[in-house]
Amino acid sequence: MAWFNFRNNSFKHGIHPPERKRSTNGLAIRQFPFSPVIILPMVQHIGAPSEIMVREGQEVMRGQLLAKAGGYVSVPLHAPVSGTVRKIASVPSISGKMVPGIYLEAFPSASQEVLDGTPIDLTSASSDEILQGIQDAGIVGLGGAAFPTHVKLKVPEGKHCDVLMINGIECEPYLTTDHRVMLEQGEDILMGIKYLLKSTGAAEAIIGIEANKQDAADHLEQLIPEGSNVRVQVVPVKYPQGSEKMLITAILGREVPSGGLPIDVNVVAVNVATTAEIGRLLPHGRGIQERVVTITGPGIEKKGNYRIPIGTPLRFVLEQVGADERISEVYMGGPMMGVAVSNLDISIVKGTSGILVFTKDEVSRPEKVYPCIKCGACVDACPLSLNPSKLGILAKFKAYDLMADEYNLMDCFECGSCSYVCPSHIPLVQQFRSSKAIVRKRIAGKQTMEHAD
Image (cartoon, rainbow, N blue to C red; front, side, top):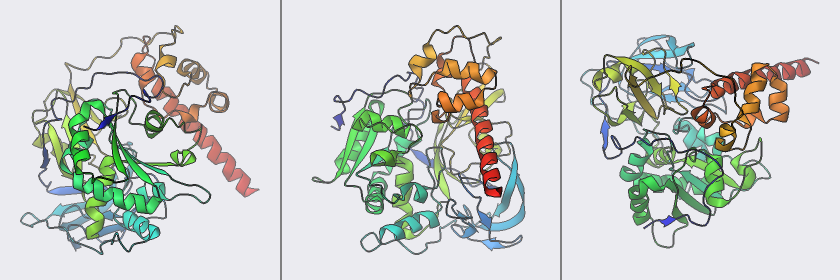
């Protein structure tokens, strides 16, 4: 049995929302049907958008390069299906904005075999060649952040990585994507770890898994060869332990400094599904064209974990899984950190880990937002020991600079713990998100003026 972490209890604070995972955690991953039309936004990751390389009317094969990386902090995009480029135009995105994109019409009778490229030979490839292979495969963080993985893995000059942390926590309620990947793609995960260890130079890899996935922990431990520098560590269940900073604290007892990154404490953290894709794609030189998504919630008839082609329209997805006609809210991601969808014409992107559907029966909104009663519940819940109450008051008075400079607003990763426990129903996370956007805009404006001078 995988070793349970009794030595370090966990990170401080946090919450315990209902897990709601039982309806899908026992369901094997199934291949999702191919949509007649695939909609591919060029903005699917943090950084510069992908740059389109195909033309309207062009026939493409599954796995073929459609768009190249728009810079170093960017990744390419590959065809999720064999078909014809019907239109290059603006497409809807989850942000509400229209962005450049491709409408790809699938060949109805194609075998949908995937094109192979140039394999990345683990034994002979250098660290830089592995990182280039990861970028060429279009791989980004599949836990939801969608940050280009090759950038995250590049250890900066003067820094050192001694631990590779594989994040299999998946603490969001309802989601079971990573759980099923660990049970069904163990060999891919271990192959991905080999690539990651070589690219980062880390001496060991630790796969962090919460105690509610003991079957996955035991399965992976059985696959790890004796004497390996890879081990599994099980930690107590608590939200938001899936945040890499919290996981590093829980397992290693190291605290990432304010404004810092895991590499500041000699750690690189990678999501377990991202690791599996590295292990699945690089040996064949393929690009990512699909991902595993949990589709669940009270408004879904055919709940499950599905391998879905990237670019599949959300409306098509809901039709296939039998969505209730009384849909009230649809989330991309989980209920804590996911984003409520305002348009069913958006599509599955690389960062989509889950689709959560509620009907009118389950959704209730507070009739009124009450003033802060200074109960301290949000302070006790915040995993970063911030003062959400004070930040909320400052946001109300638009004291954005004070929020950032004195109360560490930018450290907030919007986990939603404070909003979850607030008895006054104050939308704290929304306030912090908008405040951070204003702070970033001011910083960008100052930098522009400095360059002009």
